[in-house]
Image: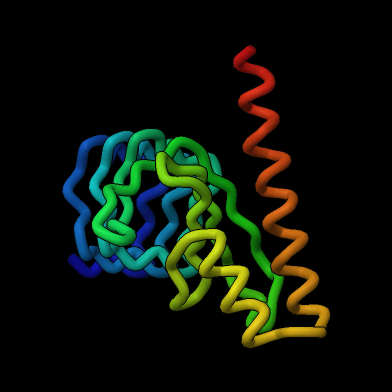
Length: 143
């Protein structure tokens, strides 16, 4: 489905099958996406503020199912000032930044290859540090 630029704010999309949907630039703020299947969905520059993505599925990585536990979005950092979505998942941290989608390890490798020694490299790596702090905060509150 082509839902690019759609205003889906506050929509109830829980358990929706959104596999391969184009959600680029869509407004999904406050949308309920619990347990939605977002496998292969294009989330580039989607507004996910206040969205509930718990237990939603992302595209598999290395044939492993990827289930969202928590997420954060960062806007305006990096070489293209794009939205970057960082997901805490059942397989670790997963990043969607522009056309990049992959694990934390793969993201760090790509950043070092593309932006080594620049402020962009510093921004991306600090963004990951911030994500880890945010994700660990929730774990501490659960204790």
